[in-house]
Every structure is written in C-alpha cells, then in structure tokens.
Image (tube, rainbow, N blue to C red; front, side, top):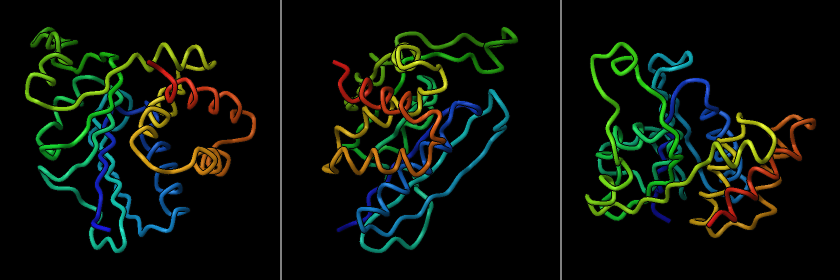
Length: 191
C-alpha cells in the first residue's frame, strides 16, 4: 500500500504526543511500517505542537510535506487552519472546535478568526468538527480530548475497535483506562 500521512496538530499540554503514540502503536499492530516524528514549537503549554504519523508497506521518512497529509487531526480550531496547506486535495480534517487564544490574541495584537469551520469548508475541505472538550468532560476528564479525537478518527479507518482498545490498554495507565475507553466511545459515536 502507498504511504498514508496523518498530522496531529495542537497546543502544548493537550495530549497530542500521547495520541500519536497510540496511533503509532495501533498501526504497528496492524502490520504497517510506521514512522512518528514530533515537531515542537514552544511546546510548553500554549505553543504549537505538530506530530507526523506515516504508515504503509515501507516508510522511508517521518516528515510530511505540504499537500501530503491524508488527515489532519486538530486539537484546536486555529491549528487546523494554520496547517491546512499540508492537507491533500481530498484529505480530511478531524478537529475539536475548542478555541485557545494564541499569544498575539492574548496581548491584543490580533483577534481570533471567526467562523473557522465555515471558512475551512468554503475551501472545499472535508471537515469533521465537534466539541471534543464537552465529550471529554462527559467521559470524566478534560484531558481526554485526545482520546475523543482518536475515537472520531477511527471512523475513517478499517481497523477493528478491539485493536484500538488494545492500543489504549498498552499506552494508558490502568487507573485511567475506563475513562479513556468512554472518551473513545463518545468520540466515535458522536453525531
């Protein structure tokens, strides 16, 4: 199979690195060659964080160039817009609708762009946007946004749910496992 590319984008502290680890584990368990690469900006809370996950029969490089991403999984709406040029023409965005003000907005030098979901869709981009923070709270922790997003992403893969659960079990501490399984189910089954 040709190499497939997933970008996970967000803001430091949102759990994007755990999401990429889970996804990498899942894809390895399905027999793919997998490369994961993390690119940290100011990855302490508030800075942009990008992770590349590439998989296929044989993957030679961990880097995704502009126009190559099959999926962009975004933890924050502006990050989805920021990385849009990396998405393939027929690619899919899976995004949380949460808005986190970047520093220029915080200091009053800029305004947070309005109607971003509509603007993304107006470009012809396929956008699956939902309130992952609300679902994470429902699951029991605001920190479960990453797992809600993976639950939603699972719609686009022909991988059995038990394989997703096995990756959760392998990467999440036992005391948080049931809450994360609930978060995954809420993301997967959201309308």
